[in-house]
Image (tube, rainbow, N blue to C red; front, side):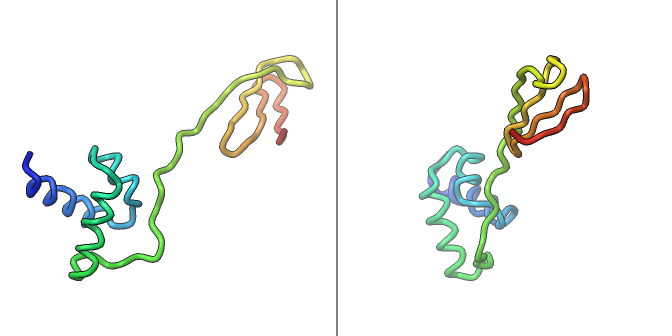
Length: 96
């Protein structure tokens, strides 16, 4: 893909997902964050896209780990975002 073709793809992606952060778009497109930021600034300066005050970051995956329940000794899911304990055996719910 030539530079011009890559720039067109980046611009179209920015138009479609203008609310997403430069880092998120760069990760999806496989280019650097600086490349996306430069294209976005060019597009904002020529009013091709609206300049937004805040951009959305990519949501993080929910990580779940397991440990023993302090109440019944069964397995407890520990959800790390938000941090929370949930025992599937006795129903204990707590924040560590």
